Image (cartoon, rainbow, N blue to C red; front, side, top):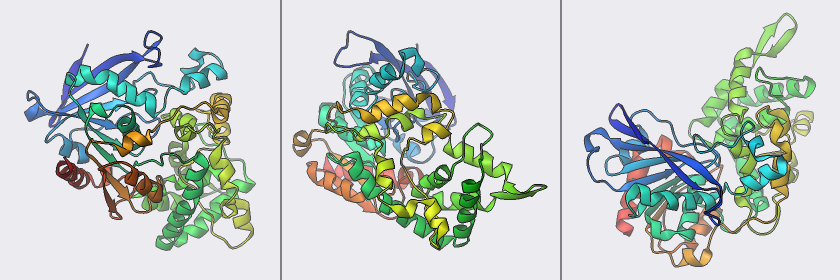
Length: 433
């Protein structure tokens, strides 16, 4: 049953679908997918082409927007939009510490989660497309990990696509996770240096907080153990358009004087626990490195191993000398499953996923080289989350792909740039078609 309702300027319809858990065995177990259809109120009865939006992540449900903000408003000028909660996220059979025990123990949970990568997401899209469009191909807009999925779509089922629009999400086709993180840590260091250049007072503030965490056992109100490594991981925000400003305001409110001396303020702790907790998107932590697995090698906690190759990120060493404390970025580490109460019950499952070697290929270089689908991609200069050099190398392998390389936006440009970003990319796609 579908349910429609209204927000300012739009009509929304809840849609649910049943798809196989394993598309290679369609007669087997099924899962439920949820998607929200959005159409402009004044075009609700028109026959419009479809745009499928694939969210970044992995592990995040689709945007829960109100009305027609930013890129969505631009898309609604010519499309019906389907906001898909990718499997395991949002309302699409969510995978978390509460639901995964239904599968059994860690081994059964890990086996289950191997089917929650881009290849399965693409096959979900192809399974529901005939029910949504009547069989017509649709335009896909892939943001970040959604762009990884769009690249898999071009590899696995290009016949389902009228156009592919990718924003900040052209993946390396054959890089191991180690290659991804070896490229990432120097980018993160540049972002931290740029932050301290903008807000030089934050260098001392960050050192003071790190020193406090090295000498105190701090547990946040939600039960999260705030280690110094966890504090450093707040640097993930530095890859977004307003992240440097958000981090600055967070650091300036860190301490308050108490009868026992200075302590981390309640306000600081409340903000930090909201930024660090994976309660709303645990699948991100579980399969983040698995999205790079496809060459018969385990990911083996890649970010943790590669970080050791960059000793400048060691907080204790930085504080022992005069070096600035370096924040880290988009990386998942085993200690997160010890610190975060939303992840603790899933530590063994995460270890098993990190040890797997049987990952299936996600991309088909030969098919991409023969691509006939119009493809356009925004590549953000020095993107903190997706390596620019990796993206451009992939762009050169996809036949007909046009890139827009810009330093006007950070990784979330489709959000912050909204109408301008999507307008330009759709115009490029029309030219390519």
